[in-house]
Each structure stands twice: as C-alpha cells, then as structure tokens.
Amino acid sequence: MKPIWIVDDDESIRWVLEKALARENLATKSFANARDAIAALEYETPQVLVSDIRMPGDSGLDLLQLVKSRFPGLPVIIITAFSDLDSAVAAFQGGAFEYLAKPFDIDKAVELIRRALDESLRETSVESGPAETPEILGQAPAMQEVFRAIGRLSQSNVTVLITGESGSGKELVARALHKHSPRAAQPFIALNTAAIPKDLLESELFGHERGAFTGAQTTRRGRFEQAEGGTLFLDEIGDMPFDLQTRLLRVLSDGHFYRVGGHQPLKANVRVITATHQNLEQRVRDGLFREDLFHRLNVIRLRLPSLRERREDIPILVRHFLVQSAKQLGVEAKRMSDAALQFLCGLELPGNVRQLENLCNWITVMAPGQTVEIKDLPLELSQEQGGGAAAPALAQAEGYSVQQHHGTVTPVAAAEAPASASPDAWLSLLEMQAASMLSGGQQEVMAVLGRQFESALIRTALKHTHGRKNDAAVRLGIGRNTITRKIAELGIDGAKDD
Image (cartoon, rainbow, N blue to C red; front, side):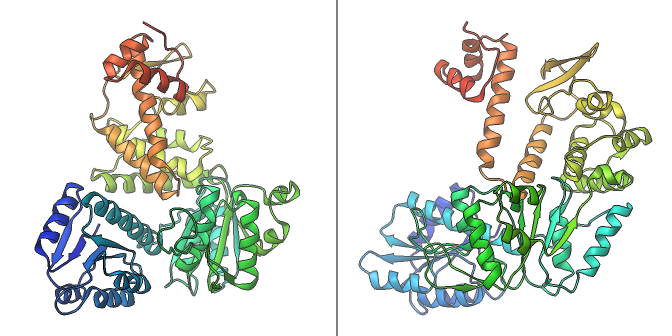
C-alpha cells in the first residue's frame, strides 16, 4: 500500500498527523508546501492526500484541481478553518473526498483518513484487477470447446451468459473473453451479486450521490462507471433481486442509468458478461427472474464443464496449484505420488476447480513431506472415497485432528494429536481462507471468520474441561455469562454447568 501524503505549512499539524497515523501502522510522507507535492507527483502517487487549503504559494485548491485532473480516483481531504465555509464548498465542487475543519479532533481525523483509505483501496482493487489474466488450463475435449468459443468471440462485443457449477472457473472465462476482446485495454470489473446485501447492491452497481441515504457522505462511482469502455462481469446473476433486474434491463436496453439519488442520466459504454450456476429458465418459470432480462443476457451461452467431466485435467491443475501455492508461501513446491494423484482423479470434488485449488493450498501447508501420499491427504477425502461418514472439513481448523477407529470418526484435541505442521500453519490457512473469501466478493468476512474462530476456541476448551462451561470460561479468560451467551449464539452442544 502506498503512503498517505500530508501537505501543510504548519509543522505541528504535520507532526500530529504523522504520529497518529504511525500508531495505526500507516505510512506517511509530508510536504511543507503544495509545490513540493506537485513535483513528487511526477514520479509517485499517494494512497490518500491530506492538504491544508491555505499555504504560501500554490493553495490546497490548486493542488486538488491538479490531482483530480490527473488522478481522478485519488481521495483528497482538505483541511480548512471553521470560518472558511466558502473554501469548503469550493473543495467539494473540486472533487474533494471530505474536508477537515480546524481545530480538529485527532481521532476523528484518523477515522476520516481511514474512510478515504478504504475508498482508495476499493477503487484500486476493482479498477486495476490482476496484472495478468490467470491461466485457464485444460486439455480435455470439453475445455477445448470452451477455448474455441473464446476464440470465436474474441473480436465481438456481444453479451455472453456463462453457465456452470460453482467453482468451475466462470470468472476466468469472463476475464479471457475480456482479454481477447477490443476492450482489453479498458477495465475489467467483477461483481458477485450474491455476495452483496440487497440494500447495498443498487449503490454498488450504479453508484450514489452524496446525501442519497444515511452514510452516503461522498459521491461514489458504481461498477458501471468503473467499467466504462471495458467489461462488467456480474457473477451469480440468478440471485439478483427482482427489482434490480428491472434497472439492469433498462441499462441494457437504452445504455443509460442514474446514480442512487441522482437526476442526471449517465451513459454506459460497457460490455456485460454474466454467469450463474442456476437454471435461469426454471427461475423464469418460478417467477424469480425476468423473462425479458433473461433473453437480453442469453445472447451467447457458454457452458463450462464441471471437473467431473474433465478428470484428465486434474493432474495438470494439481501441479499448477501446488507451484502457485508454494510461490505465495515462499516454500518449495510439493509433489504428488502417482497413487495420490490417481486417488485425486477419482474424487467427485463438488466444489470443482476452486475446491481443488483450496486442497492444494492445504497440502502445501499441512502435508509433512515433499512427496505427498494418500495418507497425507485430509482424512475426509478418503472417507468420502470409501463411502464412510465424512468428518467435518473444519475439524482441523477448529483445533482437532481426526482419528478413525473401526469406521467411527473421533475428534481428538489438538494437544493430544501428533503435530504434523508448524505452530503457525493455522495462520497460513486462515490467511488463505480470508483471501479466498475476499477475492470472491464475500461481505462481512471478519464476522464470519470471527464466529468460526470463537467456536473453535470454545469447543476446544469444552473438550479439555469435559464439557464444564464454567471451567472452560476460566481457562479461556472470559466471563461465565459470556461463554453461556456464546454457546447459545454459536449453537455449540455438549456444554454443562460445573
């Protein structure tokens, strides 16, 4: 992440902001005047710019005007005096993210900078995308048909509907269609419509004006504006709320839309590619999806095969993901034995390519040797293959290993289980899980993973205390009422009073 720039001729203000942001582990770079900041913009840019409005020489408004002309997505916070309301209005008209009135509360200033930082990172992530389109691997006849279709569509701007099971790689195909299209030099913007809460999805798609609703403290561009001239990929389109389907149909019909709370129509020069794992025809019959929108999207349909239909591709995918995972962790890539590879080729893998990639990440972190045998794979895979009752996949993540005795799966507390990985291995798995959820567009990642973390701690403590929740609370360092409430909220069974 790039540093936050502070431009102010008052050394004390620069010092206070530098120290406050350093406590937040945020890097800063300071300038005593706008001229030096303008010169620095020739060879670098900040993540957020905080500038005083009145300085000797060029003013903060001059700096704002230059930044917005060259870097329109860069948030600029203007520092102004309470008495200088005209300047504050001018700052907003010039495109400032927000203004900070002197004298300001330092905690509120940091909170404002944090908001601007989140906006900047969000803009960066959706506009830049991956520097290189991920490789689509596959030698199976079913995948060759997909490659041929991408080639035939390479010079077309036609709307494409990609169908296939979850995890089969629909976004990779959408990126390939964009990369080989006349729009390749423009943005590729992806949005998972199922991952955004219904009341926020309209704003995500079309943007909103300042003051359009509570919390809309600045104007925000939606995904249609961010994808201008390029491609907008809407994943899981079958889950789009019915009222929003009407707005999307209108954009596809006449090429214009309004921001939430806006009155000025905006033109959308965007190619729309959609994807779903659902049967849209059935959803139309059920009254859950507009038939006219379905026909608008279903101009060209591209079906992506499941991994079960292309098992011959599993070895090449496994090798690719093991190398990729090793690079991310800075370790040597592991190898699969012939028996283990053959075993993987026989699995059902309902999560398709995504499940296989996650499995390779697990192998990289958890498998004990460089050559991976069947016995080194997660136990639930062998149980699934053998028809036994599958152990929960999260058992290891929740502090348990799994042992099998005469067909019965028994969880064993981690302290009693042999250690086959480093003490920090769980952190790597947590980071991978968080990265997977974030890249998939899932919301409230902290809350989801936090619940799983709390559940794992409480279950493990109850295991050690033989279900005595008061004793478990003492061991965990939390109150008796807290653990009782958490057990109820998380649906944990097996607890009893001491």
